[in-house]
Amino acid sequence: MGNFVNLTDLIETFGDHSVLAMGGALIGLFFGFFAQRSKFCARAAVIECCEGTWGSRLAVWLLGFAVAILAVQAIVVVGFLKPESSRHLGAPGSISGALVGGLMFGMGMIMTRGCASRLLILSANGNLRALLAGLVFAVTVQASISGLLAPARQWVTSLWMVEGGPDRNLLHFTNSWMGLVVGAAIGATALWRLRASDAQSRNTWNWAGAFVGLAIALGWGFTQWIASVSFEPIPLQSLSFSSPSAEWLMRTLSTATAPNFGFDASLLPGVFAGSLVASVMFGEFKFEGFQTENKLGHYLTGAVLMGFGAVMAGGCTVGSGMSGGAIFSNTAWLTLMSIILGAGLTYKALKSINSPI
Image (cartoon, rainbow, N blue to C red; front, side):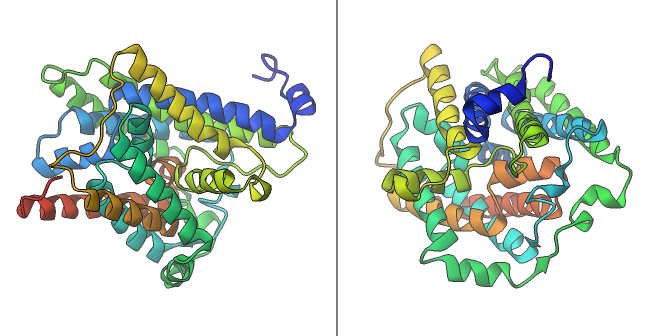
């Protein structure tokens, strides 16, 4: 890779943050395009589980997660990626935050008809309901980080903390190859369900879910690549949608206090652009507003639950569940399971009272 692109020259010419921004934009474009085409959606996957259908939406999500695990663990095994210094493993984590935040995020995900990444994808397709929910989500994230909701968030996360270090890595207690085994098992399940549902599915792009997972690995690999040659401390990270949403909110309100434009800041515009390009190319762009069967209260309440939950849990379904899950962070896996549980219970509850879902 170093022979193909002289990264040192790029950094000397444009600076670390500019190169990170360029990479973030390209990876975001890649993610946005294939997430839009594959209809990648954690909410839809949970609903299929609740209905017992185990159809294409679950298969697409499992395929993306499996590829993320396999690709990330492959570059860990060969020694290229060293995720120990990432916030998912190196920094202290919160078990209570993962549990409570994950449950709240899952509840909100059902009520807003999409997780944080899905709302951004839908917004780029002209869905104004998703755009409004995304804006409320960003405001709540910022309020939970350093605003009105911060004391409540700090109290919940402080109830059960875990120290950063090797014990936060679930693979620390097993063979280093176990991550590949887990990824292969999830992938086999995804392929089984994908083949079984292909005949009924109208989306011929289901297999593109694999590229969504690949984007997670590209994020980890790219930031590791920059960190390996930069003279500045570069945080190892991959795709996430909660903190970047809050960053864009603050950047919009006051550029004077905005952080350097880097990977996070360019990721969201890249994802939006990728989804927009895909929707226009395939004739799926369409402005959609609230209709009589849509409940504004559901969207707003769900967006607040997701925003507060995401900060407590250390990320969303992609930022914590997939990016953190791919490096086997204990709190990331706990967050993912809590999101699924919260979403499933909320779906069942709303369905039982015949409320619009």
